[in-house]
Length: 111
Length: 254
Image (cartoon, rainbow over all chains, first blue to last red; front, top):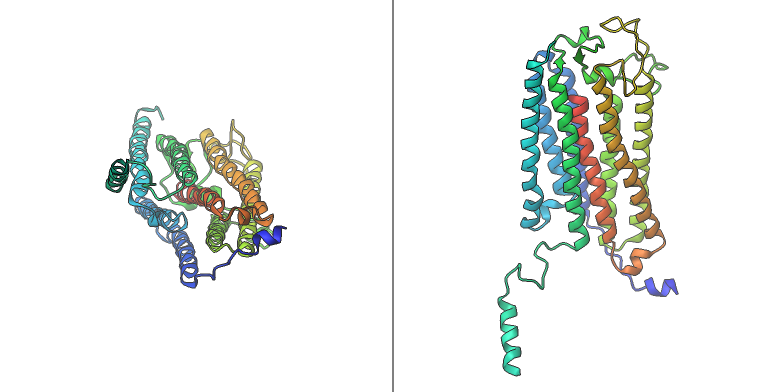
């Protein structure tokens, strides 16, 4: 009975180009992570702020690949893309506000 | 009668995108709800990581040469000096492997994200065998990650024997919620909370993935005629990977 129900299912052939693109995306993510390692242990500790800036930039690139390709958001309708991205403004605000606040706490705290 | 029908048809064709009768976002209800749930979950994780940023910047930073670093309650630890163990490294005669283990965990999670997206792709083609295969790999990746995290936690809690004392002359080994050998009290608290909250997400992701795997094998989706559930749970699984990318940067690298 079950086989009768499912016998008319047609399995489409795999799209090689699409699958290759997915593996390429994974490759980029791997390469960026490896590059982060290289930077963490090759730049001198005196350039800490530069390192942090590079790490944040690379993290955003990785996040872009995951959200755009793996989660397919890049290929969705524009309204959906913006509905997800615009609320992220709150995160940026909170980050700036609280890290600034933390530095202020450090200033006034007795050491 | 015929006139009114003609009017209705005419109005319908002039309807705007948002006037009903069609889906403006070109996505199903379930998928949209998953997206908005993930948005709210992103806020939760952002709040945790930003709170870490606040507390960390409220503490004194260690700015001298990392070679001279000693664990101390006075300043925030350098992550690469805390997370430098790898299972079995002492047997191989290696003293420290900074961030290598956590790098491996990142790699495992990225790989399981690829296998998940391949399962989604196979689902679009109604290829039951391929969905089954890729879901199995995804499950394996998720379970391996959880195992790695269990080891990481165990190591963090048990601690490493120091050559006597930390910078203050205390001899605390390991970590609990009240004190830890690595740095200020809140350092261990944030470690447990952030990686723990993420680990809980991985755990529930593995459960959902298993459910999808089970339903695929028993032919539930084939009878339903589509594999959209794989896509929805896939979104959740990629989100877990996405969060780890941020945890990796802000907890382990910076």
